[in-house]
Image (cartoon, rainbow, N blue to C red; front, top):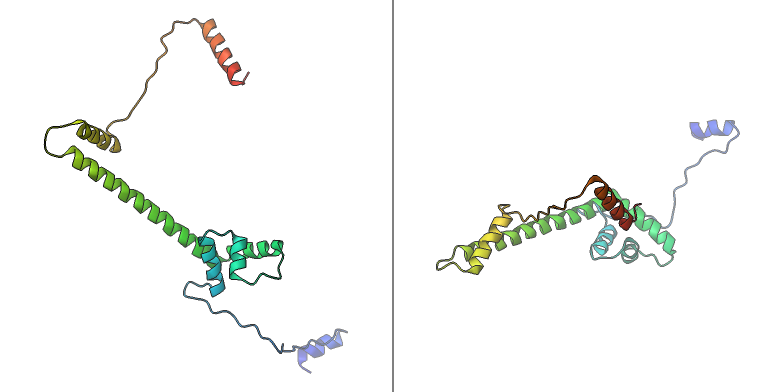
Length: 173
């Protein structure tokens, strides 16, 4: 008997014996170059395709013997997996970056077209003037402001009464 088993036995404890598990062995699923397994990748792709995490879990894993609550718990756990969440974050970051680039590209095309219209040869017409105006606004040269000024003569009591009436109308007092 090995030394540690002897010591446990002397203390009145049963000796500890390591018994190898026979039969079905669990093999680790190989990970791809992004650090996720094929099933995790299927889960990620299902989410990207618009599925919620529970449905994505059902599509990626065999969940036929699982309750909805168990599926949800496992799906949440999988979504929090560092490699899975990093892959999802990268995907959403790429989409956001592409959207920004597309918006800038559209803005550049609009400004380019406005410049073409504004700078075309010939007599200036309304479209050219409007194109120049829109170009100026896009560069912040013109800012539309509407200024209102109340020139009604009122004394202090009339102002207080008007304020009270407005507060009542707003339901504040």
